[in-house]
Image 1: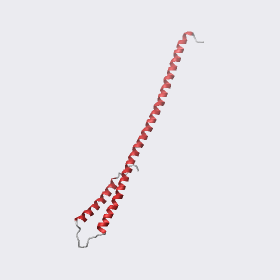
Image 2: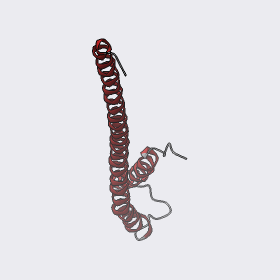
Image 3: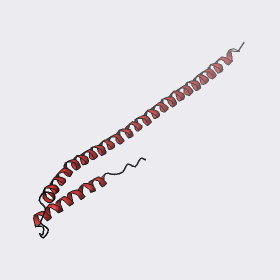
Image 4: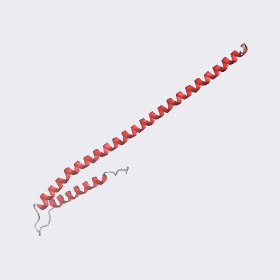
Length: 128
């Protein structure tokens, strides 16, 4: 049997142990909550990175589609003009080209060069 004088000490010790267990349980629950919050933040950051990359790729694909459309509409015009000006109405062998024909030829060359430049302007993918 425990003497009556020792009861306050035993109760105090039990309270200290209970307080220690409560602090330990609280610390553990905070650690678990912090880990879950960190994992959620990491997951959200990954999704944001994916969203940013998807938007970048969407912009590149739209730019590529616009360039392809410009080339598709420009190329037939250059070919048609070349056919009309040079093939269908050629100059006589002893004739010198007039400024209009020279301008038309130069415009066709400039359009062809511009379409080649716009093809080269599309950046290469960095992921290989």
